[in-house]
Image (cartoon, rainbow over all chains, first blue to last red; front, side, top):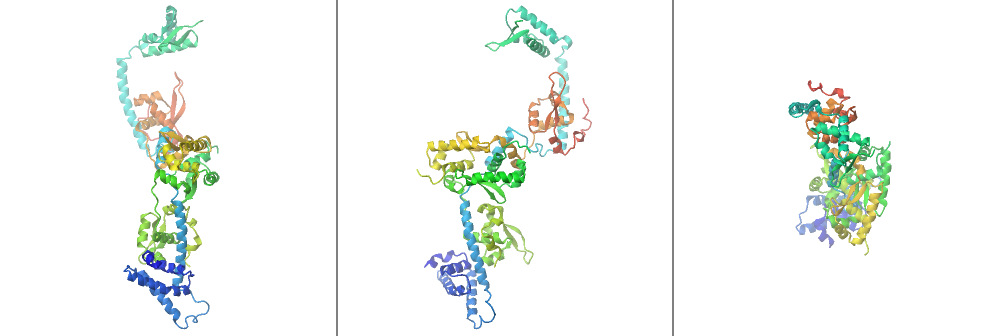
Length: 252
Length: 176
Length: 176
């Protein structure tokens, strides 16, 4: 018989009772309970024979079923009140339990669909955020966590550094950059370049022009003069194959 | 308001990255659009995803937020390629307990036991451990018994947007 | 061979889940299709993703594998939605540069470099990018150098209504 196989797999006495009613194709009411009560007791006996550990709940329900039957056998039970007799508590509970079982079936279906669906993990989100971080655009608050006093401290730090570096610079200036007023103006330099151009029959190199300068400032003046001359088409500049920059007189 | 980018494409990008359901409010703020505009864009995007058989993804409203999932038809090649950790089905005893909690929350252990006719201790422990239920309070009576309720993970497990989406809501809510 | 499911949709689902680039070979095996069939499907799917401005995603071939990523245009809303979870701080060099600009604005790069004693190019670039400083004009001298100042975002962060509300750096304010 099937009950032998299923004996220990019932979730509880309600589950067993429900199974019996379903198996006998009965509706849930007092009469049905009377009908399956005997079968229920037989199951309990079988469980005892098989030495199964019978939970006390099974016994409690058995007692309830017996009580229900006994009450029905009492004379005058049905005539005592007018109208239909109230449903016993057990019937109500069984009806509700039936609903739970139906709902569980529906939840099972949902669960079955769900476990076939997959969502992305957080890994690539973190990666995307890092990439964006590196590549572009301001976050909402780039100063997150920075307080005003930290800004103030940063300013004071930089001021301190400034004083040190200023002192160093002043010393350097006195040592190295002591050339004062002797540098030529852009106009003077322009004239100088034109003279060289006239002297050198063909091209002369930009490197030579720069190398001839005494210091950075003169180099800058020379460069500005050169640009000015190109602008006025007085000279032409081209690059040779070996990357030398060559200067020659313009065709004016 | 002038938009700097294509809203629909931006919404797709945001949903694509979501590792867990994103609230509509959050999307509105990130995209700087009205609720109406979001609804409209979302509807259009969802229709494209969910109804086109050439698309393998769907947009769902789960646990009060939006999330993209693969459609169930493609579980087989997915399992083949990624061998994802298979989500375990909930046992019958636990699922009965869970269903009762879901429909009747907040509910005490005593009440659950009365309905199922068996001790609920083990099932409650399992469900708690799986993060499907949580303590939501205490009943003000002798012993101040714990009241249980379901979690967001519960909604995610069954793909529900909220508790009202439970199947057959009239059925279990009231006892009689 | 008869297919049980839509190949294109399945490919989309597989690529959607990929945490790192997936090899074409792996896709072919998971979908049980030929290389030709994969190429064809992939081409069609990539075109749909990459060329449609209504799509926020793109399929890329990186490091010998395929991966879906969000298009660059949507970096801003992505950051807005997801960034709050990831905290990060500004570098000390940038903070010092910012402090100098805040107290001494409008100020040129040369002046900042003179004060800090190091090149300020990178810090200025970062601060500009982060929207904390901006060009506020040009100095009328050789080379017309850019003058920098702080932005409203800077004020907002510290809850200042204007620059005059910056705390007094104890007599360090005066020009040297």
